Length: 145
Image (cartoon, rainbow, N blue to C red; front, side, top):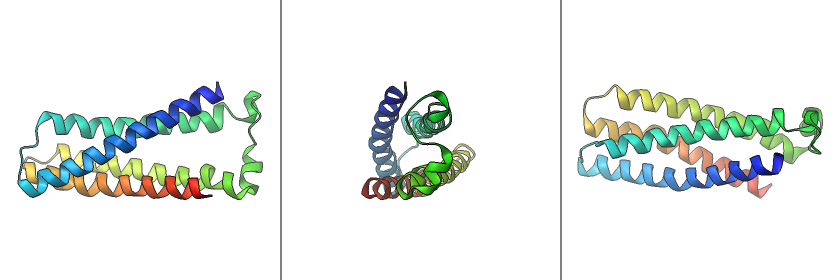
C-alpha cells in the first residue's frame, strides 16, 4: 500500500508541476494582454488548488497512516527527526506545503471575490505563482539532499 500511495503522490505531483506552469504562464499572459477571465481559467485555478489538497492528503497518509506504526518498514517519527534527509521531508517540506496551500487558498478567495478580469489574472499570477515557486524550490531541495 505504501509503494502504491507514493507512486500516486509522485504522479499527482508531476501533474501539478505541469498544470502549475500552465496556470502561472496563462495568468501572466492574461494579465498582460487584458484577456477575459473565462471559465477555463477558473477551472484551471480550481484544479491547481484541488491537486494541492490531494497531495496533502497523500502526504499525510504516507507519513502517519502507512508508516512504521502500520507494519511498514519506514522509520518512526523520532528516527525521522534524527535523520537529516528524512527530517526535511517530515518537517520542512510539510511546513512549506501547508504554507503554500494556505497561500493558494487565500489567492483563490481573492480571485473569486474580484469582478475585474485583469485583477483576477493578477491575483492568480501572484498567489499561485509564489506557491508554485515555493513548491518547485522545496522539491528541488528535497531531491538534492
